[in-house]
Amino acid sequence: CSLSWIRYKQVPDLWEKLCEASYTHGVNQFKLDMLADPPKEYMQYTIYEKGEYYHWHFDLYGTRKLTGLILLNKDFKGGEHQQCLSNTPTTINLDPGDLFLFPSYIVHRCAPVTKGRRLALATFFHGPRLQ
Image (cartoon, rainbow, N blue to C red; front, side, top):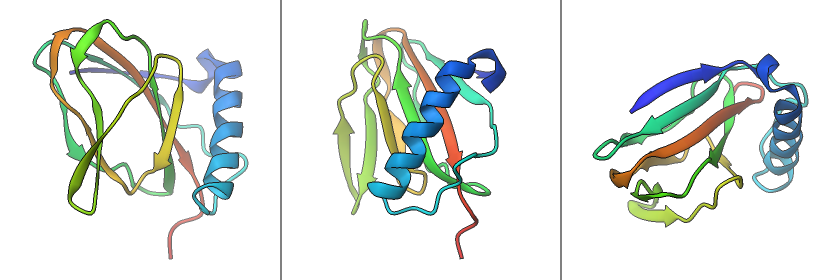
């Protein structure tokens, strides 16, 4: 897959909305200790061509607490977002433009794209270090 990085200053309105949603959901839904004004980390723009994928991984680095994923298109096959809870992979169906938030410690991947090109934006939100 091909990665590039988008600075929050390039999309300030989007960044503000993402931060608000991440704080609300991080605190209320996931009971995470979040920062109301998180460090401004680059957003990851990823292009997956046919046959490409992202291995199983987690995003819990430094003070990351919450990962946000936005699917940007739907004209591809395969490329499902999958999470592994209790050793059982689960496919999460995403629609373009939806913000899917999940704790950064959850193991996840993008399954191989079998047709077309998948475009996605990932962003990361922070809180105090885990103790």
